[in-house]
Image (cartoon, rainbow, N blue to C red; front, side, top):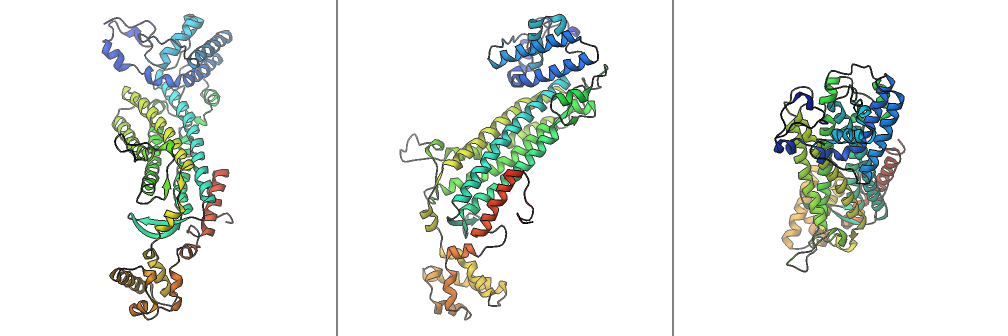
Length: 474
């Protein structure tokens, strides 16, 4: 073991060095180097604040700013030379390199009044904010694809399912929009996650605040924050914004897994409602005929991974004592994995939905007469029969058709009247899937008019970010 390197930010207290295994166990630069731009932005804002209270001269601040601009270019061009023996984390690496560029006499003043505790809290908030704003754009693209297909493919009718059993006919567009409204709700929640994390912890120090009277408001405004973290002990120990992001991701990926599961079923040979593009499918190493919906299956699987990330970091944060603890470093790998998973999954799902083809023929073939059993019940309701009674009567018609081995629509009026004499010659009008769909005219239903209104509502949401509460006329 060797003595701590002189430019470790904490070396003065120690006379013995770290076990090499502990060096690698402790380091985080392999992960938090992704925050280099945020760390530099925070450091420049911090240097400006120190200049304003007289810790740095104007010339020293200009040197620090110039030096960091050079350091950032090295990161951007992938020419930054990491020194594993001293570069424990992104903060150490950037400050070490700054000293090499402008000299340690000036660079050594940068960290005055600042701790890595408030520094990493700031870096994380800045980085997560940036990535969630990018994710917001990907989610917008997903919603746009759903709305576009729902509008152009509104003529297609297919079985709607409950309990994985064919239930009632619905429009394909209605099904698409059912997930569109899930994702729209996710979009609204994402905006709240971004808003809630956008508060500045910098200037909180290790835990007790800053002794030099820096202007934290000016720092926060320079970094684009909406306000301050008001308690310094809370500011350095708060990772709720990471948990909130992971919690949001868990709910979002739950919705992703559900649409992926539906599409797995719809793309099977048993259904054949949709066909995935080759770009999102793979084959079998043994069976040449196979075309597997791997993109959908992976989306399903990633949902489980997202649950694991949330559970893991929730467990890490549980029962920690107040202020900063090194356990919290585990949040870095968790949030990096979270953002990567959410960003790629959103893009993959968008690609799947934008390229799949639909089969109107197979959708129509799957529309069975028994799916219109509710129409028979409603037919009798209109004749004044209580629904509970009509439900029973319709069930008896289903049983009769099964007994005779034919469809409900193939039963004669006489056979239907044998079940209940109130069936008339006009009962044949019940056995029309398109007519059944068009009867669902209430808001939110599956008729052309209702689905068209849902499309309009979603378009308004995409334009304004607000969901019309009662419809566009309300």
